[in-house]
Image 1 (cartoon, helix red, strand yellow):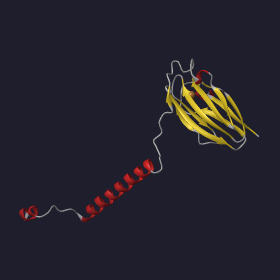
Image 2 (cartoon, helix red, strand yellow; image 1 turned 30 degrees about the horizontal axis):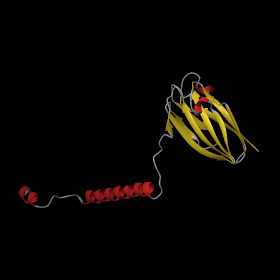
Image 3 (cartoon, helix red, strand yellow; image 1 turned 180 degrees about the horizontal axis):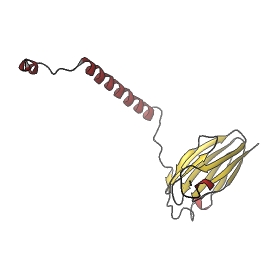
Image 4 (spheres, protein in one colour; image 1 turned 180 degrees about the vertical axis):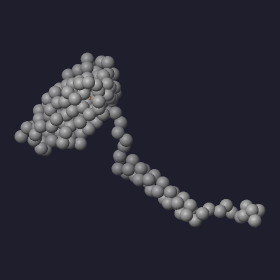
Length: 165
Ligand code: CUA
């Protein structure tokens, strides 16, 4: 009996065969989705905007003078420097309808920059610059706070973006 079996083709349970086929279909679907996303839609994995030396980031370059830069036409750049336990600047003011590109880095440990009531929520790592662009159509006060525990003063690490009418 056993000799008879081994002479035939390897036997696969029908259910197992179905699941192998389902697995291959899912794999082919995901490969197609990733390929189309990368090449047809240009979706890329986020990469650091640029790298900086945390030891000198506060001494030279744009982060030596953190704050708002008016580029004209309602466009702004905001350079924000995190350090235990403060964001510099602590306050930003723009008119309604402004588009701000945020550049955020840390000069010491890991922080998290979260701007409430928006989808701006990025890790802030020493040596890396996080970049996010947002248009503010709704006037009001937007609090930004640190959401990565960074020591005993973590809860005091916040600032305010004011969007004026
Ligand atoms: Cu910075 Cu928590």
